[in-house]
Length: 302
Image (cartoon, rainbow, N blue to C red; front, side, top):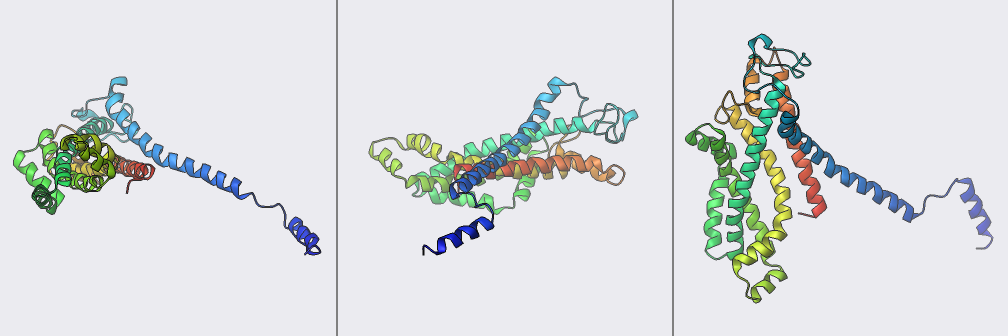
């Protein structure tokens, strides 16, 4: 064995430098993984913050033309025209202004629909999941009936009955969000109900509703938040589809779906009029989905 040591040393020297120590390799790999994890979170979050800033803050910093009226003398201006850097539509309305004000409408609708779904659906889902008994089957069957309908068909039917307006569109989309959130809340509550801290709270004499809002809700909220981000993306697409079919936001109030619907008539002559809102909608939905995935990975939500 001793005679072989010089040969092994020479072979090692001729092969070049020794590889890094395993501890150094692991530290470097962990550092890059930490950076990648942070980028997966902050890039989509930054995109959403930028979109919110442009839609809600930028009009107060810089004066932009109205999004519902324009001059026929400036009709169909190409992008990067003086005073209209995204161009104008066939009626002379500035496209950037329509994106800003239409983005405000889309943000307001999706946030309102998500809030209604989380509040009403959360109460129904946590009630069914925590109390069980006859309450769970009754509420679950109602939720299943609503979920059984295709989402777009259900929203269109409600929007047709209520009539086209922003408020009516919010309630129509809520018929989709409430049962979906109710099912997610119910499933999460069923899991939380089996945990030891819930049993301890019951044995201590804590009331059921206090247990639900003080012990169950705080422990299931991370999963609900990640799901809500994915749900907002679906709601935005549904809102755009309803606007596209003429049962949502009405002219002259701008919206992304309404812009895409109007863009059909000038698709060959002015393709940017339909491409720009479509790209903005795509970026918004992708950022929501990526942020939801990043939060789910960070919080360990399954």
